[in-house]
Length: 483
Length: 95
Image (cartoon, rainbow over all chains, first blue to last red; front, side):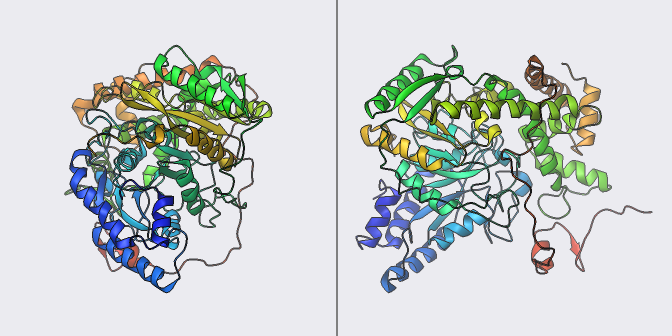
């Protein structure tokens, strides 16, 4: 039963083949059995999950169940959950019980889905390996000596190992797509403003966007149907109708124009990854798509601009953690400044401190124009590159990462080499367009991802393009050994 | 670009972050490396280019100026490190 997709679980519940309590129990048992190896959950909410499952079963008995009632899922520990620890994988919030639900959490509750627990992540979503967690690293189920990617690494590892049929993620520079690629999953970062950020702990507010991590595009469409939509509590939420993402999955790809950006096929790209992407392109040609070479001339400036904008917004957002109103407070502060400094110094991990300091520096007097303004101007250039590209093509296709999962510890001591991991994913966040990663093959038994990017609010098209590929390939069906 | 230990101390003060004195040279090195990466921005002339502050060209949404929140002081203060009669306690500021 643990290998069922969301769509299959929902169908099974409707057909009364099993109850929500039974399927919830299956996943809770698997978490107990396997998570010691992976460390993918920070909190498992077993009792609450079983209560919610029994409630769901009541709805099936009464005939009041919805499409997804009783289907289990997990939340990244960045989403606030009433009465449940919401740590953001930080010592700072180790004692934080959220007083309210994030809108994303409310929407899953309204759909009747059952939360199994909260998944591990890089602290405050800052990282690409899930090694920056106060609760320890997460291991990649495909190879326990390797990283699952980050920052949504716990979500990715848990879904890949079938400890939950889906988990939420957030993506500021690639934090859904990169772990999806490294764990053989389907992950989508929607258009900025499509999914509410209310109650999603802020890292870089102009880049952050929530989305689902799933095994199939069909499931991703179901989950985006739950997550997407206007929320008046988020001032950047976009008030625009949400299509039924499941309705267009089976559209034909005949005549679809796919663009391959030449800047994504660089010499640093693992040749075996390049070969897998070439093979995927050939599948798309068979499906009737036409392939076009395009250029995103400023995309190489994504990482430099990102490492100004994201830290600047992070230093501002994380100023709220002051040891006064909630979160960690140091012992015996001698005065107010000591209270601030030591609470923050002891409460934040090394990477968070680095980013806060970069942000404080670039925003300090005299440096604003040279750094923050310059980075935002480059952001305009990158955005314009995409707008030009989408005049020629419908979707953009390329690799999600340069290579498969790297070893735990391999890049942990070198922030810059870690940052370069997100070379292909950051541009979509800077431009605010939707991006997706889907399984596209294996290199030395490790999964690799193919990235699809679309124009603003074209999530339905990306899901359609992904689903058609998954109908003719079976990479997404592969299960890591030992789980 | 190379950040000096004094600059690291200044930044950590601006950010109200206590950092271990022994870690200052390491921070100086790591932050300098990051700023070298950031310096690639200077390859391109951006004079006259309008900055992007928000990915979508839409105006900030406004709402009517009416009360929408109820008083939840007790609930919100449940997670506070130190509270007395509804006030957050901090070390004495005024002698």
